[in-house]
Length: 202
Picture 1: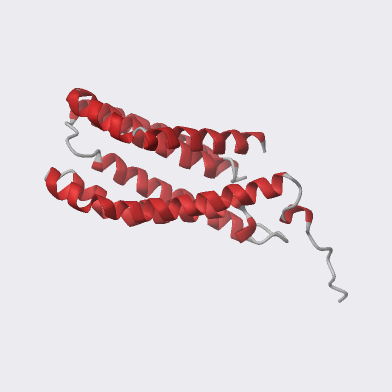
Picture 2: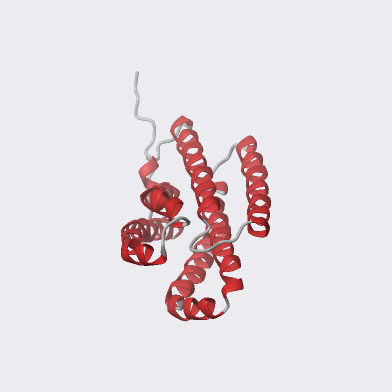
């Protein structure tokens, strides 16, 4: 549970600071155009690592965990190759597309394992379920916009960028709910302490 707590706190702090200082960061990045590609790639890398870690620590299959590690190493190598060989103008659309597809696969594996696992606890009471739903809505809702952003003019991107806030807001709501659920379970008031005995008399 300590890893879960540290991961939630780290994610909250890092992305809260990134969003708080987004205007200052953008103005600084615009003055240092060579740094823009690195910043965008690093943001995608951080997002991928945090989202993957949430799912990784909540699955029990060793085979799946090994697959996550191999795929993550492959993704990082791909990011480095893409960064070194392509000029990132508006957005690192291709790495974001690969990140989205990988995370969709991870979420499906998480759901598959949870539905197969015999348990008295509903999946809706698992904090990672709400994180996974948030990830699906956030990445799925912006997927096609991010994919096309690399080919769109900046004026058009600015005009429609607000649409990505919808997925962001919904993701934050689900993430906040998952944190409350996790804190409740950690304090001993959650569903883990309310497993009913087997009342089947037949």
